[in-house]
Length: 402
Image (cartoon, rainbow, N blue to C red; front, side):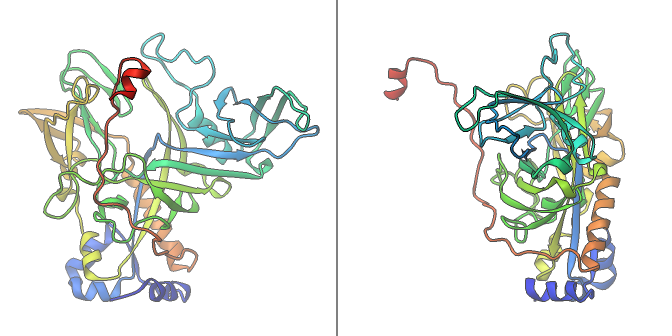
């Protein structure tokens, strides 16, 4: 019905009709899908929540004399320096040096990589301490200085796994507290937690990856970034409903963007008691309405999306694959779900309100002509399944004989 070029021409002329993934539901109910598919050009989707598989490459520029950094810390958080002389990679889940972690269980995990990333985006000063063994061309062996993101040549966010298509609802069936990346789970199924924007979430609005793929332009915490690869643990071969929406984790995206253009409101360091640190990110992705089939998928409602309830005291850590039951996001957003006849309080680590705000910001940028859509250069795989790590014991000779 429409092409990417046709939609972009409408965006450039500021005549594009853009609705967010919440608005489009009522619009189609009033207009009908045939009319809506002709009238609407783009549907904006979004999510906001912790995304542990995130990080950034930073380039400091050369000091005088030069140094080839081999070990480095930012505000005492170790960074990876196994790249070029003054490039480092800072991971969101990296703990501060000498953090006691869970030595005194449960640990506080007050500061780590995600918090340094937040400070950088906010324009705050961060301390660099770097060491080197010294070479003829890079003679300096130590550097200690302060810098802000504006002092860097590049600050590029590179996230191997963001935007899980769907995810678990975590619960604790044991008689002891469980501290997880989905928060504290009280004993005896007293509470449950989840993390998804549901009907606003990008890949739930494009369940078969018809428009979101490698090369898709995205709104990443205020910057204009893109999908650079399928995300790690991308596993679309899973159980799906009649609407093609997965009832498991399924797809993921690898995203990148310029941190210098990001906004602190959408980049926040996170601490999980008893688990570790992370970073919460805001992400928006436009879905071009090329035809009515693509539009139909954006009409998904929370009541039509189901997530698995998993016991994080036993089944999750032991990878049994067991699922207690499945519940809809409509149930989850009510604040309580019923598990085995018991009313259980539910909390969300994902902010629906922030996601809605992001979808509105992206909508406005597109309507102003400031954000064009892009056609993927490669589709995400639909026939891929995640494999597990095999634990192999024995000598090298034993392994070679396998």
